Length: 422
Ligand code: AMP
Ligand code: GLY
Image 1 (cartoon, rainbow, N blue to C red):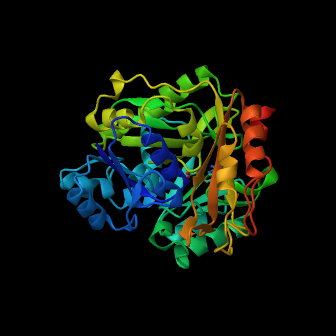
Image 2 (image 1 turned 180 degrees about the vertical axis):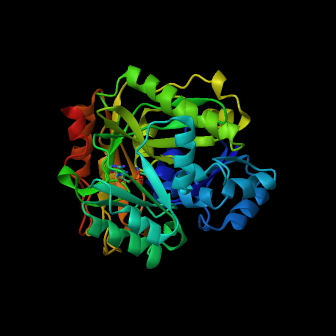
Image 3 (image 1 turned 120 degrees about the vertical axis):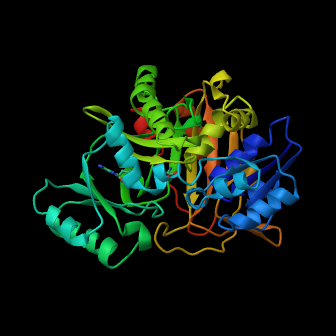
């Protein structure tokens, strides 16, 4: 079969790596891909937002199945564009992707269905939003309705701070259209957990739990990033908790979306927080997490292509998905200064040496190849993944392999997984 992966990050490298192990695959294409993906697939120079060009490429090459990685191409309707042309693609339609691309849509469905989440109010008029700020308890959380590269969430400790966030989003338009509507919600406290589920529109099968590290610096300090590292599974998330998440969150949202006329096919990724009242939903994502996927693909034993086909064909309930009993981690190496401004164009050394160590795979993200050398070209440059019999062993191996990798200004967190060890 011919398979086509859209995207160029560590997530897409991990998906490509796993798909490349499928005996059913004759040819793998990626657009636009990265140098890591180019070692196992043919990369074509089409960016992920050129939906019609991507479709035309898939038609011309007679691609059997396409896998769309990034949130923005899903929100823009890549699945609808491909399906209209008679092409098979893994991911939610534009309307179903609103579970991520419109927090207002997600909140409404959760409220209707009784899915546990923060209390909220929504506003598309900034005067009314500002009036609302007078009475509530602080801190409170203000979120842009639409996609904002993970930067559209403000935790505000006073009405002044909250007023500034509202002004910046609704008056100054700092997130464009995404911030013209805002959600103001209750501040929740507790450890965060990433849940993922393969979905075929009716059935959802949950992965092992994972934890991301969103803050840039150790001890969860500094600004939020796309994610500085992950591990899976999370030792304290029990089988009973997972079945609770299935029964109270994942199952009900899948049912609600089907009833709403927008069945969800693809990977659903609820971001949860474990409060004193149990798990609550912070957000739903309509795609694989990055860098969760890098850890997950090291643990998945079943052929990913077979799972994807079962999701597209609506027969996921017949599938038995196997995960290894090992523990996996991904430690991200980022450009100095990320997520703020950073320099790029530095040579990245040591990827091969790191991968010579047992249990290590390096997934590239913000890299490019110039004159045979790997050069940094983005904020998150790569992720070192390791597996071990338990979390400690996988982290020890991951950090040991990371010592082989160097580039100017390289920054990584030294405490990935530490919370899982406590
Ligand atoms: P989101 O994009 O909605 O997941 O929010 C990004 C991050 O903001 C989350 O990972 C949390 O760390 C934080 N956050 C979002 N909503 C809340 C909330 N209601 N209470 C506390 N923290 C939150
Ligand atoms: N792990 C964060 C994200 O993918 O949104």
